[in-house]
Length: 143
Image 1 (cartoon, helix red, strand yellow):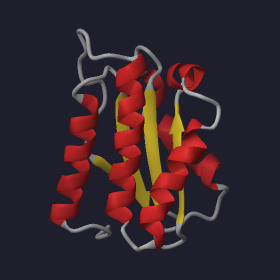
Image 2 (spheres, rainbow, N blue to C red):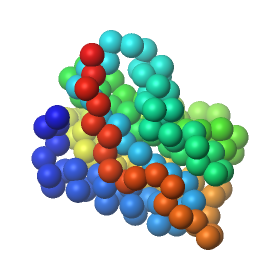
Image 3 (cartoon, one colour):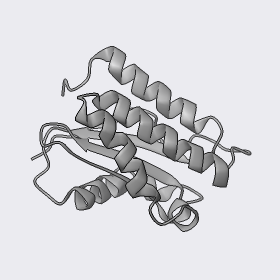
Image 4 (cartoon, helix red, strand yellow):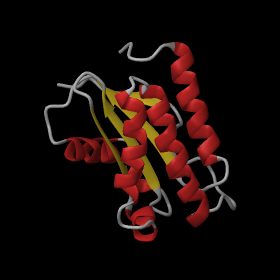
């Protein structure tokens, strides 16, 4: 799926790597063109399909974007959800949305990764961590 060019994909991978440098948390980005489901349900489906719920500390975060349908979600696992303030994901979405409104999808994704990474670093410092999940972008088929 040619949603982002090579340079944009590299910038997203670098943002994931940078955000994970100081935390044991795991970040992933999942992209597809369309989403006819409820966006949170779809993000949750891919969260499990990508094994994000299998991290040792349950501190995975997924940024999901359906580019054609202009839907997105950012969700975290039980470990991170227990420690961030209750409106954390909504406020993060608002920061991302500012970029999306201006057509800057990559910048919006990177913003979400940075904000989530900062919280992961605060509550889940790096320590003796190993990278539990790939840092690549998961491109899905949509429906």
